[in-house]
Length: 289
Ligand SMILES: Cc1cc2nc3c(=O)[nH]c(=O)nc-3n(C[C@H](O)[C@H](O)[C@H](O)COP(=O)(O)OP(=O)(O)OC[C@H]3O[C@@H](n4cnc5c(N)ncnc54)[C@H](O)[C@@H]3O)c2cc1C
Image (cartoon, rainbow, N blue to C red; front, side, top):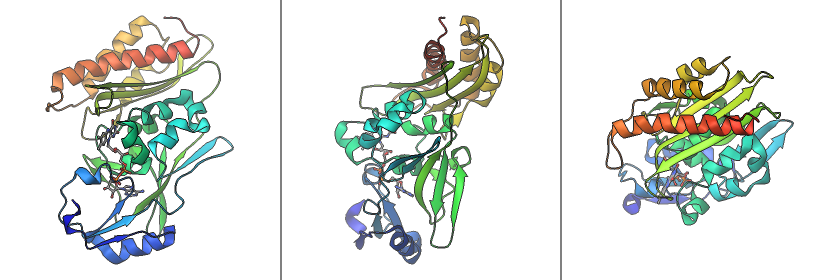
């Protein structure tokens, strides 16, 4: 990857980085932790713009909204008390599964989102949290819901733009709320064969008032299981509904077979992990199944 690089820029402000990005055009590429870029044989890249000195490594809370700087590492996320306290800590849990500690010390959340891998572990969680991606170029800044950010495997809406931060709006709270992140990998440090994130809020009678269910590694992009959410909404959360949700999600996923697992296995495991996620959500929401 690095053989053809003519210049490695290390700007110290977002403005300087954006001007550089405009100057180098299509031959330039942003680099953060480099844990994805280093494995990609992209010979068209001549200029790298390092974004780790722009002050984009932060976690902030303003009222009930969270902002996470794009260059925040997975290690920082998994340890940040605010992130551990947010939505049952599912974002911290997902960050903690992104490879080895050495990888997590370098890997950033912005890189995980921008790389647009179908199996990116923070992506399913961020979909469940209705995250918004704040992107900037030298001429404009815009906010893109993560649900509209992915255009295909390793394809996004980014066009000569930098992700500055990820915003998480207020999430449902209270004692009748539960959250879950489930990951199935070949080993503890491997990428996901399937991952599932979920969030549920129950009403006083144990019926589902609010629900989010998202999966990774089972389609070209991380995806919200909208039909499964529809099936769950308004129903009492019980064993029968868990079974129905498992069946429904298998109709929504479109996994491929590769060296890690077959499409059929991923499909079956989607059902298993969705049931596990709902069970964990129910447990946290005070419902014994
Ligand atoms: C051994 C190993 C194990 C791994 N395990 C996992 C795993 O279990 N789960 C998982 O999800 N991932 C895993 N990964 C993948 C990788 O670590 C993550 O996707 C990581 O979060 C990428 O972040 P980065 O900062 O290293 O990105 P980089 O490699 O620096 O960049 C990746 C891509 O994003 C672009 N980019 C980076 N930051 C921005 C930004 N702010 N704005 C716009 N574009 C940007 C770059 O131009 C590049 O195209 C693993 C990687 C390795 C090498």
